[in-house]
Length: 429
Image (tube, rainbow, N blue to C red; front, side, top):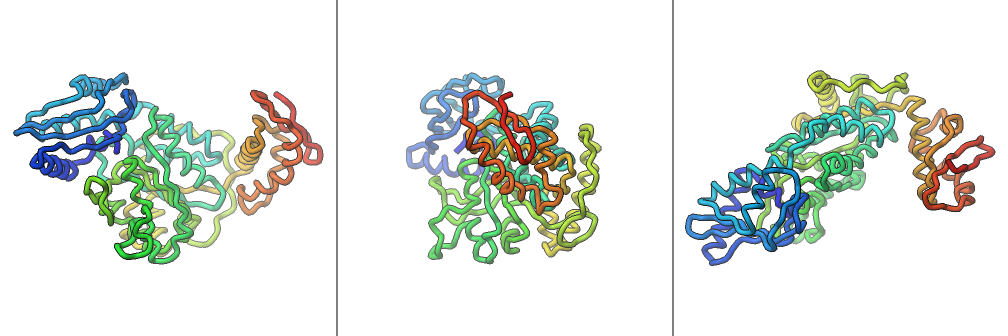
């Protein structure tokens, strides 16, 4: 449980909280949450948070007392009220909590640019897709009271960075926001090919196999800002998307089992849902496979103005939604996604950069920091024809393993790979 959830639970959540607090008060006790995660800057980082009613007054208390050393003035004023805070009525208490919500969602003014630059360092050759994802994420985390989660489909050929960008969303958001707010939950949908497999998302009914197994979606109980990554959407049974309809539209669903506080409501409004698919949703038409790579400019395009970018993405989203419906997805489902982001085949320059990045990653597996690869060698090691950029990794591993094993790892020493394919060498930089 996170303290921020009390500040963002909405009218229905507050009504449920009041019901629980009042029920506990009739029994002469408080309604408590142990191990509640506190905002960054608090000491301790976790505490027991309790709600108590006495007469017409409502109290919030922290055990142990919390000291706030952060920079947000709203949180500073709140925690200065002390370990036990009294409010004249439930509405006064919830108004105070609701006012704190902006402290958890207020973004940095340059967050769009910061996100875009961070993603560009991680995903190569997909400037347009990176800009679109940064824009969508920027809009979502700026919301103080979101009504539904952000849901994006990444579509394009295999091995061009869709999964790589998806894996980077949670850590880059945390890095740019300056706090560990988001967590990633990864699900391979190629194992959800049967209709009954949808219960692995939502939970099996009582008496069925898997009833005691934790469903994927219940991760939101542990983190209200979960990034759900669903890979290979096109391989999943249609019932999987149907099960997500109300979540993508309303931001909530009912769990099959109660949590320890007796609640069955799961709140996804601050979550991010990412889906990848190899289905072609471009305006070139519906067919298996993708067009040959187009010429990619070696220079990065300028940062789009948000207003112009919003108009461009709006039209691209609508075209892709229509293509998604033509592919067999129900129109009512296709219309629920926040955005559909195109990933294009990589140009020659980007493929060479990817090869250098793959060599660096392979070197780290052997304890080596290969910080540079000679440009001519990277070009020579990049196949002109390959199934996908991902398929070059086994070839590189077979070629580079002998030289990596011959190099003794040395702490703090960075290396450069140079030479020719038949005469490779590692030299210290």
